[in-house]
Length: 465
Image (cartoon, rainbow, N blue to C red):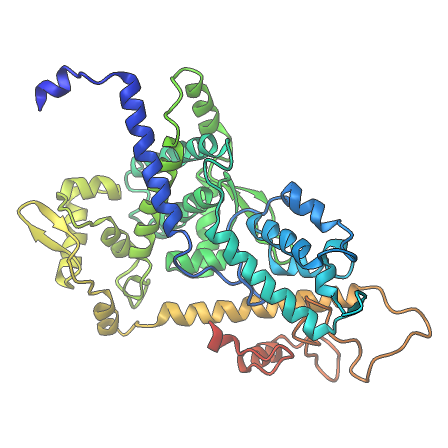
Protein backbone atom coordinates (compact mmCIF):
# COMPACT_ATOMS: atom_id res chain seq x y z
CA UNK A 1 0.00 0.00 0.00
CA UNK A 2 2.74 2.46 1.00
CA UNK A 3 4.80 1.53 -2.04
CA UNK A 4 1.81 2.28 -4.28
CA UNK A 5 1.56 5.76 -2.80
CA UNK A 6 5.27 6.56 -2.86
CA UNK A 7 5.86 5.10 -6.34
CA UNK A 8 2.64 5.76 -8.30
CA UNK A 9 2.28 4.14 -11.69
CA UNK A 10 -0.85 6.02 -12.86
CA UNK A 11 -0.30 9.04 -15.08
CA UNK A 12 -1.83 12.48 -14.50
CA UNK A 13 -4.15 11.88 -17.44
CA UNK A 14 -5.41 8.67 -15.87
CA UNK A 15 -5.99 10.34 -12.50
CA UNK A 16 -7.89 13.17 -14.19
CA UNK A 17 -10.04 10.65 -16.09
CA UNK A 18 -10.84 8.85 -12.82
CA UNK A 19 -11.87 12.08 -11.11
CA UNK A 20 -14.10 13.02 -14.04
CA UNK A 21 -15.77 9.62 -13.95
CA UNK A 22 -16.39 9.79 -10.19
CA UNK A 23 -17.73 13.35 -10.49
CA UNK A 24 -20.03 12.25 -13.27
CA UNK A 25 -21.39 9.41 -11.14
CA UNK A 26 -22.09 11.84 -8.29
CA UNK A 27 -23.93 14.35 -10.46
CA UNK A 28 -25.95 11.61 -12.14
CA UNK A 29 -27.05 10.27 -8.75
CA UNK A 30 -28.08 13.75 -7.69
CA UNK A 31 -30.03 14.28 -10.90
CA UNK A 32 -31.92 11.04 -10.34
CA UNK A 33 -32.82 12.09 -6.79
CA UNK A 34 -33.65 15.73 -7.60
CA UNK A 35 -37.45 15.36 -7.81
CA UNK A 36 -37.62 13.73 -4.35
CA UNK A 37 -38.90 15.90 -1.52
CA UNK A 38 -41.56 18.61 -1.51
CA UNK A 39 -41.05 22.00 -3.10
CA UNK A 40 -41.59 25.08 -0.92
CA UNK A 41 -44.85 27.00 -1.14
CA UNK A 42 -45.11 30.78 -1.36
CA UNK A 43 -47.51 33.16 0.41
CA UNK A 44 -50.28 32.41 -2.08
CA UNK A 45 -49.98 28.65 -1.77
CA UNK A 46 -48.10 28.14 -5.04
CA UNK A 47 -44.97 26.07 -5.57
CA UNK A 48 -41.65 27.73 -6.38
CA UNK A 49 -37.96 26.86 -6.75
CA UNK A 50 -35.83 28.53 -4.06
CA UNK A 51 -32.91 30.64 -5.22
CA UNK A 52 -32.14 34.13 -6.50
CA UNK A 53 -34.51 35.44 -9.15
CA UNK A 54 -33.03 35.61 -12.65
CA UNK A 55 -34.14 37.07 -15.93
CA UNK A 56 -36.29 34.83 -18.11
CA UNK A 57 -34.35 32.54 -20.47
CA UNK A 58 -34.25 33.88 -24.00
CA UNK A 59 -36.79 31.36 -25.30
CA UNK A 60 -39.26 32.09 -22.52
CA UNK A 61 -38.81 35.86 -22.85
CA UNK A 62 -39.56 35.56 -26.57
CA UNK A 63 -42.60 33.39 -25.86
CA UNK A 64 -43.92 35.96 -23.38
CA UNK A 65 -44.13 38.54 -26.19
CA UNK A 66 -45.37 36.12 -28.87
CA UNK A 67 -48.76 36.78 -30.48
CA UNK A 68 -50.31 33.32 -30.23
CA UNK A 69 -53.98 34.10 -30.82
CA UNK A 70 -53.93 32.18 -34.10
CA UNK A 71 -51.54 29.44 -32.98
CA UNK A 72 -51.01 27.01 -30.13
CA UNK A 73 -51.46 29.36 -27.18
CA UNK A 74 -51.20 26.48 -24.69
CA UNK A 75 -47.65 25.53 -25.71
CA UNK A 76 -46.58 29.19 -25.67
CA UNK A 77 -47.89 29.57 -22.11
CA UNK A 78 -46.00 26.42 -21.12
CA UNK A 79 -42.71 27.79 -22.49
CA UNK A 80 -43.20 30.95 -20.47
CA UNK A 81 -44.06 29.12 -17.25
CA UNK A 82 -41.22 26.59 -17.27
CA UNK A 83 -38.74 29.39 -17.97
CA UNK A 84 -40.15 31.54 -15.17
CA UNK A 85 -40.17 28.65 -12.70
CA UNK A 86 -36.58 27.70 -13.61
CA UNK A 87 -35.53 31.35 -13.14
CA UNK A 88 -36.98 31.29 -9.59
CA UNK A 89 -39.92 33.56 -10.33
CA UNK A 90 -42.99 33.47 -8.11
CA UNK A 91 -46.57 32.86 -9.22
CA UNK A 92 -47.63 36.44 -8.40
CA UNK A 93 -45.08 37.83 -10.85
CA UNK A 94 -46.58 35.83 -13.71
CA UNK A 95 -50.15 36.51 -12.59
CA UNK A 96 -49.47 40.24 -12.69
CA UNK A 97 -48.64 39.93 -16.42
CA UNK A 98 -51.77 38.02 -17.45
CA UNK A 99 -53.73 41.09 -18.51
CA UNK A 100 -51.04 42.47 -20.85
CA UNK A 101 -48.50 39.84 -21.95
CA UNK A 102 -49.31 38.40 -25.42
CA UNK A 103 -47.76 35.03 -24.60
CA UNK A 104 -50.22 34.45 -21.75
CA UNK A 105 -53.22 34.42 -24.09
CA UNK A 106 -54.12 30.85 -23.09
CA UNK A 107 -54.70 32.04 -19.51
CA UNK A 108 -57.03 34.81 -20.69
CA UNK A 109 -59.04 33.09 -23.40
CA UNK A 110 -60.04 29.68 -24.73
CA UNK A 111 -60.30 28.52 -28.34
CA UNK A 112 -63.83 27.70 -29.46
CA UNK A 113 -64.84 25.18 -32.15
CA UNK A 114 -65.02 27.89 -34.80
CA UNK A 115 -61.37 28.80 -34.13
CA UNK A 116 -62.18 32.07 -32.41
CA UNK A 117 -61.11 32.76 -28.85
CA UNK A 118 -63.49 33.75 -26.05
CA UNK A 119 -62.61 35.25 -22.68
CA UNK A 120 -62.32 33.00 -19.64
CA UNK A 121 -63.98 34.01 -16.41
CA UNK A 122 -61.75 35.27 -13.61
CA UNK A 123 -62.18 32.09 -11.56
CA UNK A 124 -61.45 29.79 -14.52
CA UNK A 125 -58.43 31.85 -15.62
CA UNK A 126 -56.94 31.91 -12.14
CA UNK A 127 -57.50 28.17 -11.61
CA UNK A 128 -55.87 27.35 -14.97
CA UNK A 129 -52.86 29.54 -14.27
CA UNK A 130 -52.38 28.07 -10.79
CA UNK A 131 -52.61 24.52 -12.11
CA UNK A 132 -50.18 25.12 -14.96
CA UNK A 133 -47.76 27.04 -12.74
CA UNK A 134 -47.49 24.23 -10.18
CA UNK A 135 -47.03 21.74 -13.02
CA UNK A 136 -44.24 23.91 -14.49
CA UNK A 137 -42.53 24.26 -11.10
CA UNK A 138 -42.51 20.47 -10.64
CA UNK A 139 -41.20 19.99 -14.17
CA UNK A 140 -38.42 22.55 -13.63
CA UNK A 141 -37.41 20.88 -10.37
CA UNK A 142 -37.21 17.48 -12.04
CA UNK A 143 -35.30 18.73 -15.11
CA UNK A 144 -32.63 20.89 -13.52
CA UNK A 145 -29.96 22.08 -15.94
CA UNK A 146 -26.80 19.99 -15.65
CA UNK A 147 -23.25 20.22 -16.89
CA UNK A 148 -24.01 19.01 -20.40
CA UNK A 149 -26.76 21.61 -20.86
CA UNK A 150 -24.77 24.58 -19.54
CA UNK A 151 -21.06 24.65 -20.40
CA UNK A 152 -20.40 27.26 -17.69
CA UNK A 153 -22.16 25.34 -14.90
CA UNK A 154 -19.18 23.31 -13.73
CA UNK A 155 -16.84 26.31 -13.58
CA UNK A 156 -19.39 28.43 -11.73
CA UNK A 157 -20.12 25.57 -9.34
CA UNK A 158 -16.39 25.16 -8.77
CA UNK A 159 -15.94 28.84 -7.89
CA UNK A 160 -18.91 28.97 -5.55
CA UNK A 161 -18.00 25.70 -3.86
CA UNK A 162 -14.47 26.98 -3.24
CA UNK A 163 -15.87 30.20 -1.78
CA UNK A 164 -18.24 28.32 0.53
CA UNK A 165 -15.46 25.94 1.54
CA UNK A 166 -13.24 28.88 2.50
CA UNK A 167 -16.02 30.52 4.50
CA UNK A 168 -16.65 27.24 6.34
CA UNK A 169 -12.96 26.75 7.07
CA UNK A 170 -12.68 30.30 8.41
CA UNK A 171 -15.73 29.71 10.58
CA UNK A 172 -14.39 26.42 11.94
CA UNK A 173 -11.12 28.16 12.83
CA UNK A 174 -12.89 30.96 14.75
CA UNK A 175 -12.52 29.43 18.20
CA UNK A 176 -15.18 30.60 20.64
CA UNK A 177 -17.22 32.61 18.11
CA UNK A 178 -19.95 29.99 17.74
CA UNK A 179 -20.20 28.53 21.26
CA UNK A 180 -20.91 31.59 23.41
CA UNK A 181 -24.04 33.71 23.70
CA UNK A 182 -25.72 34.08 20.30
CA UNK A 183 -22.89 32.24 18.54
CA UNK A 184 -24.73 28.91 18.05
CA UNK A 185 -27.67 30.53 16.23
CA UNK A 186 -25.30 32.76 14.25
CA UNK A 187 -23.49 29.68 12.97
CA UNK A 188 -26.74 28.05 11.92
CA UNK A 189 -27.69 31.12 9.90
CA UNK A 190 -24.22 31.34 8.34
CA UNK A 191 -24.39 27.66 7.33
CA UNK A 192 -27.87 28.17 5.84
CA UNK A 193 -26.80 31.22 3.83
CA UNK A 194 -23.88 29.16 2.48
CA UNK A 195 -26.35 26.44 1.53
CA UNK A 196 -28.60 28.95 -0.23
CA UNK A 197 -25.57 30.20 -2.19
CA UNK A 198 -24.87 26.68 -3.42
CA UNK A 199 -28.51 25.91 -4.19
CA UNK A 200 -29.07 29.19 -6.03
CA UNK A 201 -25.67 29.18 -7.80
CA UNK A 202 -25.12 32.80 -6.79
CA UNK A 203 -23.01 34.48 -4.10
CA UNK A 204 -25.90 36.93 -3.64
CA UNK A 205 -29.06 35.29 -2.26
CA UNK A 206 -32.52 36.35 -1.18
CA UNK A 207 -32.93 35.51 2.51
CA UNK A 208 -36.42 35.69 4.00
CA UNK A 209 -35.94 35.68 7.80
CA UNK A 210 -39.01 33.50 8.30
CA UNK A 211 -37.71 30.80 5.98
CA UNK A 212 -34.24 31.14 7.48
CA UNK A 213 -35.77 30.54 10.88
CA UNK A 214 -37.82 27.55 9.78
CA UNK A 215 -34.89 25.86 8.05
CA UNK A 216 -32.52 26.47 10.95
CA UNK A 217 -34.86 25.82 13.89
CA UNK A 218 -34.90 29.35 15.30
CA UNK A 219 -37.33 32.27 15.25
CA UNK A 220 -37.58 34.94 12.56
CA UNK A 221 -36.39 37.59 15.02
CA UNK A 222 -33.36 35.51 15.96
CA UNK A 223 -32.61 34.96 12.27
CA UNK A 224 -32.77 38.69 11.57
CA UNK A 225 -30.51 39.55 14.49
CA UNK A 226 -28.07 36.80 13.49
CA UNK A 227 -27.77 38.23 9.98
CA UNK A 228 -26.93 41.68 11.31
CA UNK A 229 -24.43 40.27 13.82
CA UNK A 230 -22.76 38.30 11.04
CA UNK A 231 -22.71 41.44 8.91
CA UNK A 232 -21.10 43.44 11.72
CA UNK A 233 -18.33 40.83 11.92
CA UNK A 234 -17.80 40.75 8.15
CA UNK A 235 -19.20 37.28 7.49
CA UNK A 236 -22.07 38.47 5.31
CA UNK A 237 -23.24 41.74 3.81
CA UNK A 238 -26.65 43.00 2.76
CA UNK A 239 -26.61 43.80 -0.95
CA UNK A 240 -30.26 44.75 -1.44
CA UNK A 241 -32.99 45.86 0.96
CA UNK A 242 -36.36 44.10 1.12
CA UNK A 243 -39.08 45.46 -1.12
CA UNK A 244 -42.74 44.44 -1.18
CA UNK A 245 -42.98 40.65 -1.05
CA UNK A 246 -39.28 40.23 -1.87
CA UNK A 247 -36.85 39.67 1.00
CA UNK A 248 -33.48 41.35 1.42
CA UNK A 249 -30.44 39.95 -0.42
CA UNK A 250 -27.26 38.93 1.36
CA UNK A 251 -23.77 37.89 0.23
CA UNK A 252 -21.22 35.64 1.96
CA UNK A 253 -18.43 37.63 0.31
CA UNK A 254 -19.32 41.28 1.00
CA UNK A 255 -15.86 42.65 0.19
CA UNK A 256 -15.17 40.26 -2.67
CA UNK A 257 -11.81 39.38 -1.09
CA UNK A 258 -12.23 35.61 -1.07
CA UNK A 259 -13.54 35.61 -4.62
CA UNK A 260 -10.60 37.66 -5.88
CA UNK A 261 -8.14 35.36 -4.11
CA UNK A 262 -9.78 32.35 -5.70
CA UNK A 263 -9.77 33.98 -9.15
CA UNK A 264 -6.04 34.57 -8.71
CA UNK A 265 -5.49 30.94 -7.74
CA UNK A 266 -7.28 29.79 -10.90
CA UNK A 267 -4.68 31.45 -13.10
CA UNK A 268 -1.87 29.72 -11.22
CA UNK A 269 -3.14 26.15 -11.30
CA UNK A 270 -4.11 23.50 -13.81
CA UNK A 271 -7.82 23.41 -14.63
CA UNK A 272 -9.79 20.94 -12.55
CA UNK A 273 -11.20 17.78 -14.16
CA UNK A 274 -14.59 18.11 -15.84
CA UNK A 275 -17.38 17.69 -13.30
CA UNK A 276 -15.19 18.27 -10.24
CA UNK A 277 -16.84 21.63 -9.50
CA UNK A 278 -20.36 20.22 -9.68
CA UNK A 279 -19.33 17.27 -7.52
CA UNK A 280 -17.78 19.56 -4.90
CA UNK A 281 -20.93 21.68 -4.87
CA UNK A 282 -23.14 18.62 -4.35
CA UNK A 283 -20.88 17.32 -1.58
CA UNK A 284 -21.13 20.63 0.27
CA UNK A 285 -24.90 20.79 -0.23
CA UNK A 286 -25.20 17.30 1.23
CA UNK A 287 -22.95 18.19 4.18
CA UNK A 288 -24.70 21.45 5.09
CA UNK A 289 -28.19 20.04 4.54
CA UNK A 290 -27.51 17.07 6.81
CA UNK A 291 -26.01 19.34 9.47
CA UNK A 292 -28.96 21.75 9.48
CA UNK A 293 -31.57 19.01 9.40
CA UNK A 294 -29.96 17.29 12.36
CA UNK A 295 -29.88 20.49 14.43
CA UNK A 296 -33.33 21.75 13.37
CA UNK A 297 -35.54 19.87 15.81
CA UNK A 298 -37.93 20.60 18.66
CA UNK A 299 -35.50 18.99 21.09
CA UNK A 300 -32.93 21.74 20.45
CA UNK A 301 -35.08 24.86 20.61
CA UNK A 302 -33.79 27.56 22.98
CA UNK A 303 -35.39 27.94 26.38
CA UNK A 304 -37.45 24.87 27.19
CA UNK A 305 -35.41 22.69 24.83
CA UNK A 306 -31.77 21.66 25.04
CA UNK A 307 -30.66 24.77 23.16
CA UNK A 308 -29.03 25.59 19.83
CA UNK A 309 -25.50 24.66 20.91
CA UNK A 310 -26.64 21.16 21.88
CA UNK A 311 -28.24 20.85 18.45
CA UNK A 312 -25.07 22.01 16.72
CA UNK A 313 -23.06 19.47 18.71
CA UNK A 314 -25.48 16.68 17.80
CA UNK A 315 -25.27 17.71 14.14
CA UNK A 316 -21.50 17.14 14.14
CA UNK A 317 -21.89 13.52 15.21
CA UNK A 318 -21.88 10.81 12.54
CA UNK A 319 -22.06 7.04 12.38
CA UNK A 320 -18.25 6.94 12.49
CA UNK A 321 -16.82 7.66 15.97
CA UNK A 322 -14.97 10.96 16.52
CA UNK A 323 -12.67 11.85 19.37
CA UNK A 324 -13.47 14.65 21.80
CA UNK A 325 -10.59 16.72 20.43
CA UNK A 326 -11.83 16.41 16.84
CA UNK A 327 -15.35 17.46 17.82
CA UNK A 328 -13.95 20.34 19.88
CA UNK A 329 -12.06 21.59 16.81
CA UNK A 330 -15.20 21.31 14.65
CA UNK A 331 -17.27 23.20 17.20
CA UNK A 332 -14.59 25.82 17.82
CA UNK A 333 -14.30 25.26 21.56
CA UNK A 334 -12.08 23.64 24.17
CA UNK A 335 -11.91 19.91 24.74
CA UNK A 336 -13.36 20.34 28.23
CA UNK A 337 -16.35 22.30 26.95
CA UNK A 338 -16.91 19.81 24.13
CA UNK A 339 -16.82 16.94 26.63
CA UNK A 340 -19.46 18.64 28.77
CA UNK A 341 -21.70 19.15 25.75
CA UNK A 342 -21.27 15.54 24.63
CA UNK A 343 -21.95 14.24 28.14
CA UNK A 344 -25.20 16.20 28.09
CA UNK A 345 -26.25 14.58 24.82
CA UNK A 346 -25.17 11.19 26.13
CA UNK A 347 -27.41 11.61 29.17
CA UNK A 348 -30.43 12.02 26.91
CA UNK A 349 -29.44 9.09 24.68
CA UNK A 350 -28.44 11.36 21.80
CA UNK A 351 -24.75 10.42 21.69
CA UNK A 352 -22.93 7.09 22.04
CA UNK A 353 -19.46 6.74 23.55
CA UNK A 354 -17.15 3.89 22.56
CA UNK A 355 -13.44 3.19 22.51
CA UNK A 356 -13.20 4.94 19.15
CA UNK A 357 -14.96 8.08 20.35
CA UNK A 358 -18.38 9.74 20.09
CA UNK A 359 -20.98 8.78 17.48
CA UNK A 360 -24.64 9.33 16.69
CA UNK A 361 -26.92 6.53 17.97
CA UNK A 362 -28.43 4.21 15.39
CA UNK A 363 -31.92 4.98 16.76
CA UNK A 364 -33.00 8.62 16.49
CA UNK A 365 -34.31 9.64 19.93
CA UNK A 366 -34.87 13.34 19.24
CA UNK A 367 -38.66 12.96 19.17
CA UNK A 368 -38.57 11.10 22.48
CA UNK A 369 -36.43 13.82 24.06
CA UNK A 370 -38.73 16.53 22.71
CA UNK A 371 -41.76 14.85 24.27
CA UNK A 372 -39.96 14.44 27.58
CA UNK A 373 -39.07 18.14 27.56
CA UNK A 374 -42.62 19.12 26.62
CA UNK A 375 -41.61 20.87 23.39
CA UNK A 376 -42.83 18.41 20.77
CA UNK A 377 -44.52 20.26 17.89
CA UNK A 378 -43.12 23.72 18.65
CA UNK A 379 -41.43 24.09 15.25
CA UNK A 380 -44.55 22.90 13.42
CA UNK A 381 -46.61 25.50 15.31
CA UNK A 382 -44.11 28.18 14.31
CA UNK A 383 -44.28 27.08 10.67
CA UNK A 384 -48.08 27.45 10.68
CA UNK A 385 -47.82 30.88 12.29
CA UNK A 386 -45.29 32.11 9.73
CA UNK A 387 -47.36 30.76 6.86
CA UNK A 388 -50.32 32.76 8.17
CA UNK A 389 -48.20 35.91 8.57
CA UNK A 390 -46.88 35.61 5.01
CA UNK A 391 -50.41 35.13 3.68
CA UNK A 392 -51.68 38.23 5.51
CA UNK A 393 -48.81 40.29 4.11
CA UNK A 394 -49.36 38.98 0.57
CA UNK A 395 -53.08 39.74 0.83
CA UNK A 396 -52.36 43.28 1.98
CA UNK A 397 -49.88 43.86 -0.87
CA UNK A 398 -52.48 42.60 -3.33
CA UNK A 399 -55.02 45.00 -1.81
CA UNK A 400 -52.60 47.88 -2.23
CA UNK A 401 -51.99 46.85 -5.85
CA UNK A 402 -55.75 46.90 -6.39
CA UNK A 403 -56.02 50.37 -4.82
CA UNK A 404 -53.24 51.69 -7.06
CA UNK A 405 -54.69 50.13 -10.22
CA UNK A 406 -56.24 52.49 -12.83
CA UNK A 407 -59.94 53.12 -12.26
CA UNK A 408 -62.57 52.40 -14.94
CA UNK A 409 -63.41 55.27 -17.23
CA UNK A 410 -66.42 57.40 -16.39
CA UNK A 411 -69.65 55.71 -17.45
CA UNK A 412 -68.15 52.21 -17.40
CA UNK A 413 -70.14 49.41 -15.84
CA UNK A 414 -69.83 49.42 -12.04
CA UNK A 415 -69.64 46.27 -9.97
CA UNK A 416 -71.85 45.54 -7.00
CA UNK A 417 -71.92 47.37 -3.68
CA UNK A 418 -68.79 45.61 -2.53
CA UNK A 419 -66.70 47.43 -5.13
CA UNK A 420 -64.26 45.92 -7.62
CA UNK A 421 -63.48 42.27 -7.22
CA UNK A 422 -60.07 40.58 -6.91
CA UNK A 423 -57.25 41.52 -9.22
CA UNK A 424 -57.22 38.63 -11.71
CA UNK A 425 -54.60 36.05 -10.75
CA UNK A 426 -53.25 38.13 -7.85
CA UNK A 427 -55.73 39.29 -5.23
CA UNK A 428 -57.50 35.95 -5.21
CA UNK A 429 -58.75 36.28 -1.64
CA UNK A 430 -61.11 39.18 -2.32
CA UNK A 431 -61.30 42.55 -0.57
CA UNK A 432 -59.11 43.07 2.47
CA UNK A 433 -61.13 43.49 5.72
CA UNK A 434 -61.43 47.01 7.14
CA UNK A 435 -62.79 48.68 10.23
CA UNK A 436 -66.34 49.92 9.61
CA UNK A 437 -65.87 53.24 11.42
CA UNK A 438 -62.52 54.35 10.00
CA UNK A 439 -62.09 52.28 6.85
CA UNK A 440 -58.55 51.37 7.94
CA UNK A 441 -57.15 47.92 7.26
CA UNK A 442 -58.09 45.35 9.90
CA UNK A 443 -55.06 43.06 9.95
CA UNK A 444 -56.34 41.06 12.91
CA UNK A 445 -59.55 40.19 11.06
CA UNK A 446 -57.48 39.25 8.01
CA UNK A 447 -55.58 36.72 10.13
CA UNK A 448 -58.84 35.31 11.48
CA UNK A 449 -60.35 34.94 8.01
CA UNK A 450 -57.24 33.32 6.55
CA UNK A 451 -56.91 30.89 9.43
CA UNK A 452 -60.59 29.90 9.13
CA UNK A 453 -60.54 29.64 5.34
CA UNK A 454 -63.44 32.06 4.87
CA UNK A 455 -61.78 34.28 2.27
CA UNK A 456 -62.57 34.22 -1.44
CA UNK A 457 -59.92 31.54 -1.92
CA UNK A 458 -61.47 29.39 0.79
CA UNK A 459 -58.36 27.43 1.81
CA UNK A 460 -57.65 27.28 5.57
CA UNK A 461 -54.03 28.35 5.96
CA UNK A 462 -53.41 26.40 9.15
CA UNK A 463 -54.84 23.21 7.72
CA UNK A 464 -52.76 23.53 4.55
CA UNK A 465 -49.47 24.21 6.32
